[in-house]
Length: 489
Ligand code: URA
Image (cartoon, rainbow, N blue to C red; front, side, top):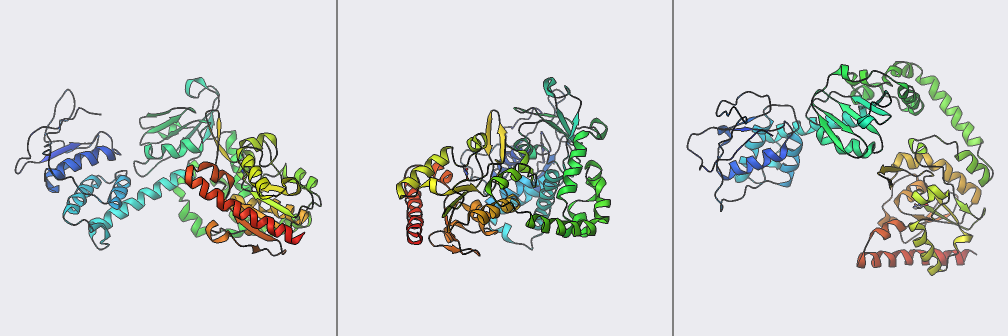
């Protein structure tokens, strides 16, 4: 940061203040200075907001430390500046826009909010409309970054601290969004060494720490590598010709990003061959339907090779259900956890132990039930040595549904107990609210009764009264299932 000071001067009439921002995306710095200026009643026209490298710093200059702000300091008892939550959340995002006028616009809005606290609700106000436009454009840019950053592997040993396997991506954002999105990429690619190079600054992650560096050029990033071939074949396999809408695809994936995306090279051929592929998919679907395995053992064998979604590459193995082949009760969880993935069996970790105790208390014999999950692979992110559970997306649950349906077709349970919303989605093919679905059975098309309750892992995350309350509801749900099992036997 440049050396900046606040003077203890009171605001002087007719003065013009210059605020030098240390970085173009420094919302916190802008917020602190803007609050103080509002408290000192400095008019919006009397402030210039200057970005690094920007011009307009005509008011004060100190050769050694950079610009010195001669900003007034509010009196101790000055009324605090008021800002609605809506304004602050927009301002945080708008500060990342590349429009040089953004900070002035935000200050003008903050100033006006002091006399009109509901101003953000006025959709006809030009400042409000402009700030909403800028916000939208920043969000869109972040979305594009999440979707279109493509890593390429660079030479072994070139990674931070000489680590092998270093992945580098090139991206050209429209706005100053790189730092704000560091957390997203850190969580998503937690156990990789990667760098994202951009003309607005770069991020480097080595699995433990994030480092920033200055702007890069396109020529600093590699062009292609073996991962690219994998990525292309993955894209070609998930590309769904039946859903092809060329217009929508072009607006979602503007051509500007294509040059960084290996799969873009396939787009022309994929579109051209879309009809033929759709026909093939229909045929493959029919084939798949006819090839339903007859036994749980065959099903488990086939699941080992499943690569229908990206989670299949996580974890150690597909964890299929276990229990009696024709159990009257099927219990369905979300997905195997860390311990289930290692053991290759469902519900053996902490959630499983909680479930076992609750089943025993309600008189349900787990060994007479078939226990399985909606998703067969463990989805997680690596944090250091720990594998942290990630909730599967609706699409992943739907993709895995084929396995659950086959388990149901073989076991033919009379009663199914879904533990949590993911399990309910896996059984119903649509999202239901737990609150609405629990307490009474839902009849499935094969006449099985579906009972929905909370997931034991959810109960384990609660404490004290909340846990006791939820545990009582859980026990009540199990008691109803037990009563139905008794009635049907
Ligand atoms: N949570 C689940 O949903 N399933 C398991 O098998 C273990 C934990």
